[in-house]
Image (cartoon, rainbow, N blue to C red; front, side, top):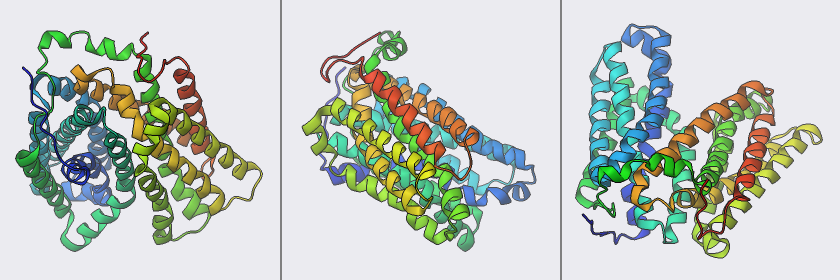
Length: 401
C-alpha cells in the first residue's frame, strides 16, 4: 500500500514540527542531572539505584531504536512517533507523581522507550522527505547542533526549575513538552513511509544494512562527529574550570561557542552538499577533524596551554561536526528507502555504541585535564572513516561487502 507524501512545509515549519522530538530524548537525560544527587533521599533508596535510572535510560534509548525502527517500516512513521510521544509524556507525568524507587525505575525505562520511538520515527521521516532535497543537509546539521546545546544548557534549566518549583516540576515540564509536541504532530504530521512494508521484506534487512560499505562509512563519520563532541563535553570542565580557573558562568559561555559555530555552519549545509557532494563533504569534514587534532596536539606539547589553544581547534572541529552531520545520515541511509526505519535504528545504535565505548575509553585512559582525549579520538576515528571512504564508490553507486 502506497502512502501519499503530503509534506509541503517550509523549512522553518518543518523544523518547528520535528525538532522537539530530536531534543526530548536528550532532555530526558540531561535536565534530570541536577536533581540526581537528591533522589536517593527522596525515594528512600541507594545512590546505586539512582545511577541505574541513568544507565537504563541510555541503554533503552539506544537498543529501543532497534525495535521501533523495523516497526516504523511495518506500520508507518506516524503511529510510532505519536505512540512514542504519548509514552514519553505519560511516563514523565508518572515520574513527577511517584515516590517509589521501583516504580521510578520502571517509568524511566518507559520514558526512554518513548524517546527512542519518537527519535527513530523523526529521522526516518527526514529520510523519506528530504533524501533528495538540499534542505536535508540543513536539517541534519541543525539537529546535530541542537543536540550539542542540550548537554550544555539542559542541566541549568533543570536546576532553575528545581530551585523554583521542586524536582517534580522537572518531570512535569518534560511531560508538558512531550504532550504539546505530540498534539502538534497529531494535527500536522502526515504519514511519509513510501511503502507499508510487508513483514517478509524485512527479513534479511539487518544483513543488507550491515553489508553496505557506504552505510559503515557514513555511520563512522557520524560517530567521529558525535564522539569528538562527547570527549569535548567530558574534558572541557576539567580543562577550562579546573586547569584554567574559569567560573561556572564563564565556562558555560565559552563551552557554548562550539555549539554556536556548529549552528552557523549548519546553515550552509545545503550549499556545501551542492558544491562538493555527500562524499566530498564527508572527506572534508574528516580533514577538518585531523587539522583540529594536530592543533590540539601542538597546543599540548609545543604551545602554552591556554583557553585559545583549546578552543580554536574546537571551533575548527565544530565546523567539521556540522559539515559531517549534514551528510552522514543521508549518505548512510540513501540505499535503504524501503527500510529507512530499520536502517535509521541501526545507524543510531552503532553510533551510540562507538561513542559510548571508544569515547569513554579515550576519556578514562588518557591524561585528565589535557587535550589528548579529544585529539586522539578525533584523529583515530577520522582516519578510520577516510579508510572506509576509500572503499566506497561515487555518491551515486552503492557498495556492498
